[in-house]
Image 1: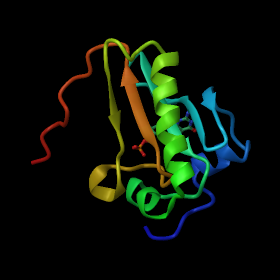
Image 2: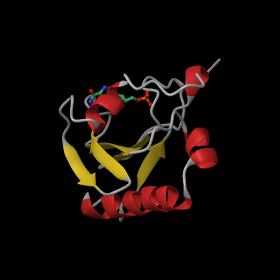
Image 3: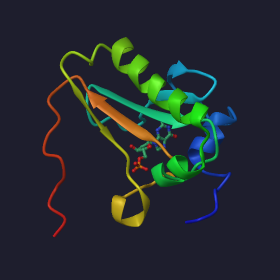
Image 4: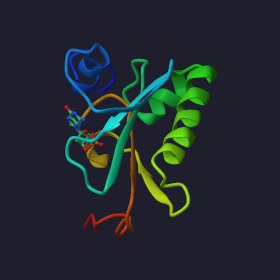
Length: 122
Ligand code: DGP
């Protein structure tokens, strides 16, 4: 997957063609509740730019976009009251990573103890 797919679900959400439950928005990111939550707090943070994966974002995003992304994460964990007790962030990438939506996104999971880091792959 080397070319950004403008028809992916998160691109449609960014264009307001699909609804979402927004918890935070800035010039650089949109953050909304995962449709299939795996924890009491399960938020997806996505850059507004067209990036497929974390490595695409790291290689091609501007310094402002990268800073804006991580500043948003800091604000969201404060806003959602999960900073004190902790939380997990996950970014799935490509086939082996189990990425379903080819627009870079960070899962933020919290509100309870999150289980084992990975299920056994083999
Ligand atoms: P990943 O496997 O890392 O690509 O996770 C994609 C996540 O996106 C998955 O947890 C479910 C979520 N998701 C898929 N479609 C939608 C949608 O239309 N709205 C919202 N809010 N979340 C979605």
